Image 1: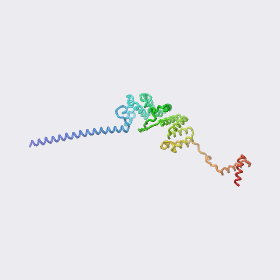
Image 2 (image 1 turned 30 degrees about the vertical axis):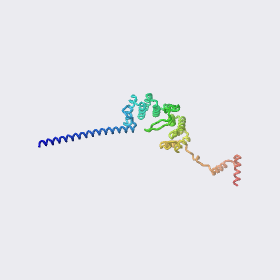
Image 3 (image 1 turned 60 degrees about the vertical axis):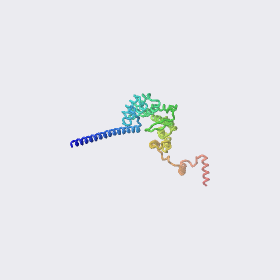
Image 4 (image 1 turned 90 degrees about the vertical axis):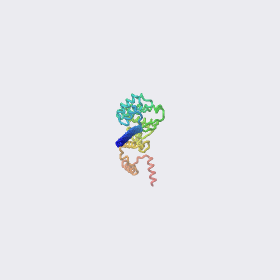
Length: 325
């Protein structure tokens, strides 16, 4: 009896021990699966970042700088990491350009100009054109109009010499995360438009007009047309300005359907109307036969009865009387 009880207890203890080992194994499996799931989710999250923000893979200073800029939204930390990337020779072309853009957003444009001027020598020849474009925006932001004009002229000279776009007719550009093709013709017109605006800031409206007209001949658009209209208004050439503005509002220029462009054209038209002299009521008077007869009667009362008309008018008058009979 006692032996049977002991055997039963041993069996129960063995079963309990087996149950405990089984539960422990299940818990370990669950922890492992949770860990794998967490890693998988983290990996998927990272992949989402790479897709959404176009982040490069890796853990280099440049990658961490882009993560700070785009994901963490910490521009100050991004600038520090961009500097580290430049000093480490890690994607210097992109690091310098991206750092300058972030500096501009923080109103540190002067510092960005100095950084590009000091370190662009470390960048490839292919990146110089994009660095120039960043510099133009920075000069505009700082009000360095003379530097902006000089750089725009330099870029136009490169186009004339056939050295722009690395000798190609088109290039791939990026705006708001989207890629598109830009032709030499479009780039020339864009640079001329920027040059025209720079001359406008210096109130050199004659040069601005010349540049804007050349830009419109190459690749016309509504925005440059508005600027040309404003340029003509500043020169008090109101009729010419109104013709250009009317073309925009009639939809005869590319981009005329753009809401902002149309609104700007309407604002220019209102400004133009406020500058035009007000019409006098006599300007709207229509001269009809009754008015002319009345005027002749009045004139006859002021002068002797003898007519002072030239002979040719006397002949016409007699012929008219004969026809009347």
